[in-house]
Every structure is written in structure tokens, then in C-alpha cells.
Image 1 (cartoon, rainbow, N blue to C red):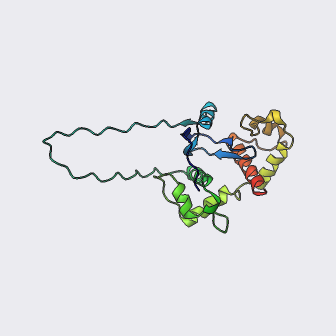
Image 2: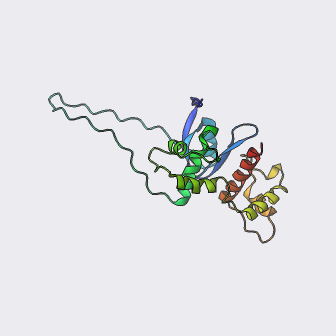
Image 3: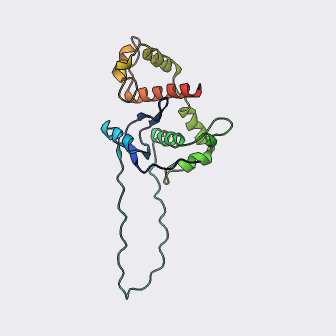
Length: 209
């Protein structure tokens, strides 16, 4: 059964990736560009970290009164959603990732990929629907096959030398600490790459049970 929305939930729009705990043993990462509902406490956490903003509800416009003698106009057609502006590959990937993050196990096929219908149902109303080919390409990146295995090994080795003092308030390894632990000559990680590698490692841990 779908979860009932908490009365304290708020809608947020992400400007940078943000990870928060959903339970004592699991986390959830919201990618940059994602829009959706999170608990109010997480909304405040995101704004405090300057990784996004809470979307304030807009008051509905009151209908304008019509003069009594005004001729009856034909009923207005329902507004069609405005087509979404063309997205960059990175923005489209972030949009797909956000949609997949809301899906349950029943939304995945026997091959382990999210179904096209489920993804399209979770995309924003003005988003272009995904095709099976686009789903396959995006899922290949989201599921980790696009992660550089050498880079992942470097990142994993760096993590093994870090302590609790090297973690952020959200429980992720600090960028400076990771870079200090990387082997000499290795390219430094950015916050975005740290988030992607960290999310990939967490997904591997969860899949291993």
C-alpha cells in the first residue's frame, strides 16, 4: 500500500545533492534538480545546508466576478501543462534518478530495471515520458554500470583510513578528508563525485543485505 503523506511534509527543490537518514541503517540521496516531498525537518536541513529550498505553496487566484449582463462565455478548456524546457543530459539523468528513488520493489521488472510505466508515473507532470531505450540507457548509469571501477576502488581505499571525525553531519565522508587520503597523483574528488560514489557504495551495501 502507498504511504500516506505526513501532514508535516514539505515540497523542496534541490540545487545540489543531499543525503539524509531514513532509518538507523539506510540513507536517501536527493540529486540536484530533484523536486518532491520530504519531511519538514529534512526540508529545514536542506535549506540550512544550502543544497535546496522549500517550495512555498502558491495561493490560488480567486475568479473575477462577471457583470450580470455579461454574455455567457463558452466553458474554458482545461489548461494543458506547459512543455518542459529541453534538459541537459545531466538534468535528465537527475530527473530519472529522482523518479526511480520513489518507486517500490513492485515497480521493477524481472531483469531488475524499473518499468517504463512506473518511471513515467513518477516523473513531473510536465516532463517528457521515457522510452524503453532511454530507460535502459539512464538505468545503466543510475545502477552503477557507468561508475569508473578504478575511481571507485580509490574512493573505497580512502574511506578505509577515515574516522568519525572525517564525516559530515549527514554522515558522508568530507571531501577534504577523502582527498587527503587519496593516493599521490590521484585527481581530487568534487562534492558531486563524492556524493555519486558514496551513494553507489551505499546501494551496494543495501543490495548485499
